[in-house]
Image (cartoon, rainbow, N blue to C red):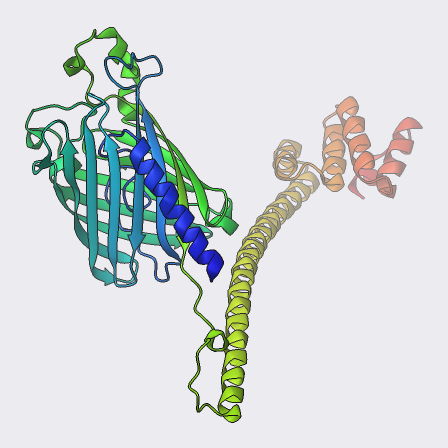
Length: 443
């Protein structure tokens, strides 16, 4: 318990330092609540094991910008938490890139208002910004009211989350510069995002791939979990404007001419603070003075049962994972069985067709219609080129047609496929000794 409080205190201390050091855009990628880059979403967890999360993130728009004119990157610090009742809170702090002396503090709130199966509808307000730019003011126009519909589907070991929604304020438009233009005149206000949780690094929660449209551009990124408590985020915003990356240095000293929707390389680091474990009954330091030994014994038994229940729950989780693995193996085995069955059916069908051509060939051969017999045997060999009997009969047909070279060639192929083919051995020997007759061929 003491270690948990120490971890909480250290995390808050680190967060305080970060809040005083960063200078950031108001909507830096990976700084908002949820598991997307810039758009709102609702990562609804049935059992959230974390008390809150703290993170730092950065958007680099220029590797060679002159700091005397404007910043070349935005850095952000944030704190996020989600309650069991469906509330999500977030707090971000920093400065916008241009000019770099404008500081902002933003608050974000979201609530799930409807759930059905794997679909959730939520609404909220974000970018409640307090800006410090010489005149301490609240940015009313930047406040974003939004609604988002989230659908979550699982297949194999992957989980796909789809987020569709609309909003106002900085959900519609959030430039890198401190523009006085009316932000309601820019952007569509509609957004769409996909988050694919993969089985890679599954012990740490799984690596996530992100693609989203924020109303002005396309953002792509990934979240890589190092452990259950630490993860790194990498991506790029407005990748559709990639040709304009780092173009600001070509526009002179007037920062108002900077590209508002410039693409940016985004990076982030998140630390999750787990919930404190529930205290055991035996950890209670103060008992009533009149407690009896029998009551203490019952408390010990209850505590032992709690430990047993926790152990059983852990075993259930392990068995569930093993069950998923077995189901995957069974599915693979069933697919292999179906493939084998289809191959057997195909082979049986080919065998039947070859047998029909061999029968027709033999009938034409006895009727001395050798050209028709040759056509039938060629069809049989096309279907299955590894039947010795087919080459033996084709050799006999060529012999009847007077083509002795092809006849002996086909007999040798038949003998190569079946070295114990005694009839062919006798035919080749009789041909060599010039004592081959028609009766031998018909046999």
